[in-house]
Amino acid sequence: MRIFSGIQPTGRKHLGNYIGAIRQYVEGQDRGDPAIYSIVDLHAITVAYEPDQLRTNLYDTTAALLAAGLDPERCILARQSDIPEHTELCWLLSGVCAHGDLNRMTQFKDKSGQQKDLVSAGLFIYPLLQAADVLAYRADEVPVGEDQRQHIELMREIARRFNERFGETLVVPEHRIPEIGARIMDLQEPNRKMSTSVGADSGRVYLLETEKETRKKLGSAVTDSGREVKRGEGKEGIANLIGIYAVARGVSEDEVEAEFEGAGYGDFKKAVADAVVEFLAPVRERYPEIREDEAEIERILAQGAARARELAAETLSDVRAAMGVGVPRS
Ligand code: AMP
Ligand code: TRP
View 1 (spheres, rainbow, N blue to C red):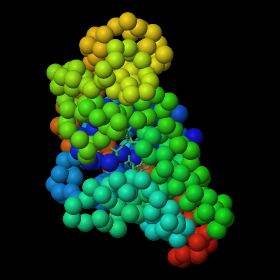
View 2 (view 1 turned 90 degrees about the horizontal axis):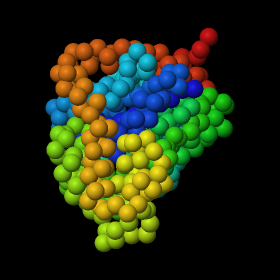
View 3 (view 1 turned 180 degrees about the vertical axis):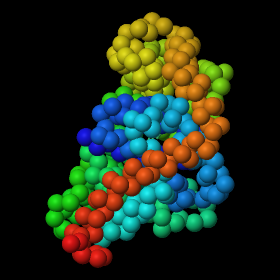
């Protein structure tokens, strides 16, 4: 089973990224044959950014993934821009990707609304590059959070259309969205997902911040005027904390509700903070040493790119042949 996922080197990764995506990447290493994880710098240039900051963010994100437990001996960890097959396939697939489908993407609508100076063409075709990322490896499974469901549907449609038009060439991938924690909500505005770019810092727990900061944010998380630690109508804040606690402790949400029956919100929030601090401690402890050695990070990425390119090149050769593009294969 081939596994592929991508993560953007933007901003600081948060608890939503960790619970929705990164912990699934770590788990996938042992099922993946191989598991390929890409730091997608070419996706990050579709909105306003600073070149120096992009490099720094790329090292931050790669180091965070390594600290979270990705092991370059058990998975392929690569930088998207090191593998030109991604961009080539993006173009080749553009002929079987409907403009109308791209126009329906909710992430494009959200993100384009946030741009101040320019809505780039890149932002519009972002999901097409994402499709190429996955299809280039003929991946079977794509671990992501809930917000990527629509993008995965689109890449499935693109693969199907390609195969119909040019013959069976690409694998139609399946998403892997976790049962609990696929959509971690903002701690201050629990009707909206925790996000790198929207809302105040107090609404998101960063993967890399101090224990004190994490405790403070969880301690002041918005709840409701009721008093029961239960999911339900108007209880988005508590429901979010129940999900977070369940994942951090490896139990079900029903078990969390049973455990905190009769407890006050204050005690519950303190327990959530303890659980999250413990859950993130190994990542936080390993990170500084890994982040310091940029040469080693580059070495890992170069090794990953070499392995990834071999796989992608095979697919590209088949795609070009099927499409009648380039020098004929003998
Ligand atoms: P990004 O940082 O946008 O590249 O996202 C990386 C991964 O984190 C993707 O698989 C997203 O679906 C996932 N993700 C982002 N925000 C959340 C969230 N609030 N809850 C759960 N998963 C998330
Ligand atoms: N768009 C994804 C996100 O914002 C990142 C991504 C890029 C991705 N390429 C991918 C995710 C391929 C899964 C597969 O989270």
